[in-house]
Length: 505
Image 1 (tube, rainbow, N blue to C red):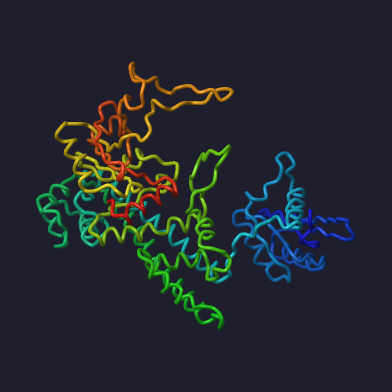
Image 2 (tube, helix red, strand yellow):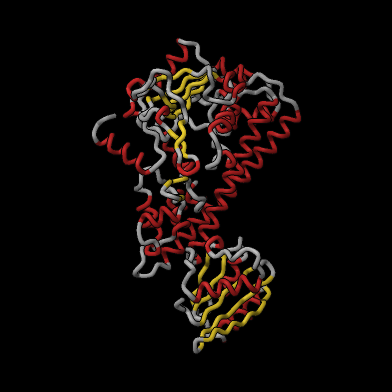
């Protein structure tokens, strides 16, 4: 195999030590020198001196948690090119793993040009990325404290979150402070609500009628103080980010675009605010030259379907994990856009319920626990954009008129399941379903339907009991095929665009 870098090094980085292998190619002979260094500053400086003495032109290491960062920062002072590798891309053969073998393997891969460098932004962008990631973690912690406040109120039988969308908004905080101060009269507490609160006074009074003990007041005070401390920390981070951006603009080279200009460009995208623009900039940097096309950027972010095909069959299109910070940054921007359009967004689901593996049932149960008091639940899948208000109304009317515990939208199956086969040994076909007696032609087969995923209507007590959307008690509402497209693949998306452009919806 062709040698691309004749003098290079591979580093196996650990918390307390670095195993380095320098690989030199001289007269078709390979010489390897392996040494171990401590990860203290003096140890890494010694590693830098040794790599310079060995005249290395390229040095590669794998990304191992945060341990690679101090090594990268110090070795960046050297006059060689640094390459950070994704650990999954350079995995060694199982059963041959030692620190020396790992360093040697990395060096060999690098010598033949088989390591694709991961994106490492410059120091200023790294600092801003660290600040904004910390900010997101603090916001998540704020959400947890809000949920703890809701739990404490529920224990005291105070149903404030049933009548006020944001219990830590202006009205909610005022009422909570009064409750903590010892006020228990519901009418006095309800009078503290801002005039923009839509709930009537009678409903507010009933929601605020509970049994609050000193224990509840202590917990409420504790959580509110924690929430306020986190809000103060978030404000300090925002100030530091603003100062960092101003400093970056001052140090911008003549051939570079200022960070503030890039943020101004990003916020022209619908749904992207200043905070989201800052986070995008901190994650992808200013230089788009490292991404050959927009598709490469989308793939790097983990926002496009993966390839998993074997024997001509596409087995999965699941998104890979990618950059979780970039994938999740639109949450609050989407919420803000929804609220501006007149919708309510009373909470953000927990992180463990926001994974690709999470099903709809636990998510819906979590929402019902947070928002009690409803008799019917309507679930509209976002991957079915062609349904209409008439489709939703039809499902609701069917549920009420027929007293059905659950109703789902369905569409006629384009290919009858009676014509489907499974393949056994030697490729022999076996029918999945035997056709009804007397149905010898395709036209004579019974019509069949499938749940198209557009609309689900269930009665809440029934759903709590069954924890399913579809049972033998479920009623179907037929939707036309042209509005039953569920976006699972790129082809589905293209069909939706075609139908929209042709005015079919």
